[in-house]
Length: 248
Length: 261
Image (cartoon, rainbow over all chains, first blue to last red; front, side):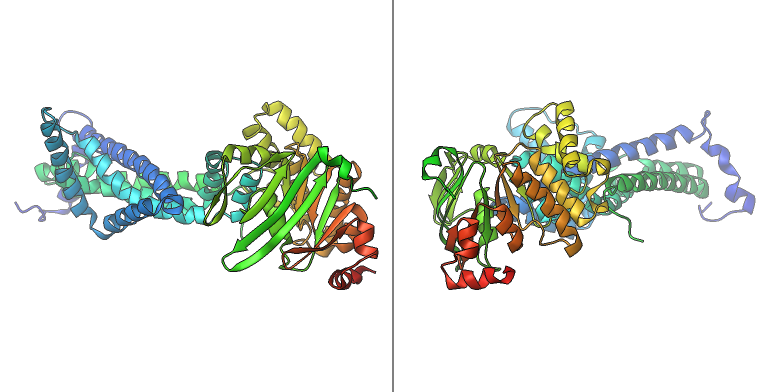
C-alpha cells in the first residue's frame, strides 16, 4: 500500500495506541529520541555560547591575526548550508581524528554520535553566537566599562562584573533565536544516522505507515520544547532587564 | 594663601610637563599641576581647552604622549613607545586607580546593579572587603549623599541629580586619597545642579583632596584653594582662587572669569 493513501478517515487517526508505552508501542523510543534531541541541543548551545563569548572578545580585543581567523570562521560557517557543514564536519572530522590517531600509532576510535553531533552543531552555533554577543558587547555604554577601569578593576574583573552582565539583556533575543534554531537543527543529524527525534519518527512511521500519528506526535514534542523555552527566555530577559525602565 | 613649597612631602597628585596628542591634534602641550593633601584644585577653561583630558590622564583613562604623573607620592611607571607612553605595570596602575575616586559627567553607574550594589562593587571585588563591612560602609555613604532610601533602586529609575550623588557615594566608598570630578554637573538639568554641588561642597569643607573640572565658575571660586585656567592645552593662569578670579593677569582668563562678576 502506498503510504499516502487511506481506506477511510478512521485509519488516519485511529492508531494512537502505536504511541503507547507498552510492548509494541513506540512511546519509549519516541521519548528516547526526544531526550537525545534535547541533549544535543543543550550541549551544542552551551558549546556555541562558549565559542561565541571568546569569539566576540577575540573579534573586539584580539590581535590582528586573531581577528582575521575569527572573521574567516564566522564567514565560512555562515556561508555554507548547515546540512553540508554537518556532513563535512561529521565525516571529515571523524576521518581527520582517526588518521591523526593512526599517525600517532593509536587504534581508531568510534566517535559517539552524541559527541559528534554536539561538536558539529556547536561549531555552527558558535559562529552565529560570536556575532550576537559581539553586537551585544558593543551596545554596552562605553562609560560603564570606563568606570570599572577608573576604579582599578582588572580586565578580567571588568569582564565578569560589568561587561558580561551588562551585555546580556542586549544578547538575549538573539541568543533565544539561536536556541530555537539549534533545537530544530538537531533533526539534520538524522542524515548521519544519529537516532534523535526526527530519525526515530521516520523509522516508526516507515515501519507502521502511521505517518500522521508519528509526525503529529513529533511536532507536538518540538512545539512543547519551543513553548517551554519561550517561557524560560521571557523570564530570563525580564530578570536581565530589571534595571531598565520599560518602554510604554 | 600658602600653596606650600614646604608641604611637598604630602603631595597627593603631581603632574609634570604632560603632553597628549590625538592624531595630529595636540590637546595638552606641557601641563603641570600639584595638588597637596586637603587641596581643592579646580581646572577651568573653555570647551576644547584640554581640561577633561588632563583629568582623565591622571587615572590613565587617557594615556599621555609624554610627561610624568605621581599619585600619592608614587610615580606611575611608563615605557616609551612610538605611540606614546604605555604603563609598565598594569597592576601598579590598578592599585593607584583605587586611590582616585572618579566622578564622571554622565555618572556611568552600572545599570545592572542597584544603587547599593554600585557602591559596594569596588570595595568587594577590587579591595576585597568582607561583604558585611562593604555594605555597612556603602549605606553610610549613601546616607551622607541623602540616598539611603533609594539604595535598592536601579540607576535608571533615579533623577540625574540622584544618579550623580550615587556616583559620588560610589567614589567615596573606595576610600580614595583624591576625588576627581569631571564636569559633575554638566549633564544635569539646572534645577538638579544645586543638590550635587552641595554634596561636593560638603566634601571640600571636611578637608577632602579634590581635583575638579567644572564650568560652574562661582562654585569653583568658592570651594577651591587653587585654580588652574587652561587655554589651548597650556596653563594660562594659575594660583589661589583669589588670584585667578580677582587678580587675574592674563587677558583671556580675565574675559573668561568676568562672566561671574
